[in-house]
Each structure stands twice: as structure tokens, then as C-alpha cells.
Image (cartoon, rainbow, N blue to C red; front, side):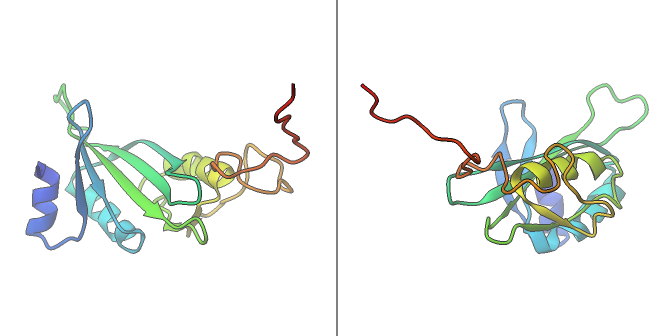
Length: 158
């Protein structure tokens, strides 16, 4: 089932994939990394003027990484603002996504955290660096295939 925003994007020839609706009825769309910056600008102009949150997760061990954006249309006098969830999937070998810092400034810290924990590089981010882990830390702690340094698991101990 296609939502209102998905229909609007199709009408204007913008490539995306509808992922349906979440449990709260919020429309979820998949955007290709190379299309993300231009679609982000279009969504901002269309009225999605608030980045509620950005996060990232590891889809499966050895699989794709996902960067997720929750956008909201804030308007005066509206009690139930329109929301959309955007998902961008990238390969873990070279995870690169255009930064939307220049569209929504609130992406600054959130994209840094996704970089620090999962290793997704946000191209054109002005200050992309580690913020939770030391600069010399090796690896990306929230990846499912991450092995902690100096960690030895006890197996078959009986």
C-alpha cells in the first residue's frame, strides 16, 4: 500500500521504494544513498522542517547497514503533525551516505554517533569524528560482527 508521500514522489518522478507503515501508521520509505541529498532538500521544501531523530543499525551480521531518519512537518495550529521515516541501506564494505547536516542542523551530533558506533561515513559533514569512543579505537562497536579487543569468551567450560 502506497502512502501520501510515496504517491507524491511517484507523481514527481522521484525514485524510492515504499516499505509500508510502522505500528503507529507512519509511512516508511527507502531511498538510495546517491538520491538522498536531493530528496532531503525536496522533503524540506515540501514542509518536513524538523528532523526528529537519526539513528543507524546493523541489519544482519555481514549484511547491510541502515541509516534511519524520522522527519516531521511542524505547522502552527496542527495537533497531529505529518511524519515520515526514511531508511537508507548501504554496504558495510564502504558505507557512505550524503550528510543532511546542511538541510537539518540537528543531524550534526546524530550522524557523528552513527559514524562512531557503526562506521557509516556521512559525506560533506563538516566535523565528522568519533564522539563516544577514543579517536584511536579500532572498529565499530555496534556492528553485529564486532569483536571487542582483548575479549576472550569461555566456551564449553564444564
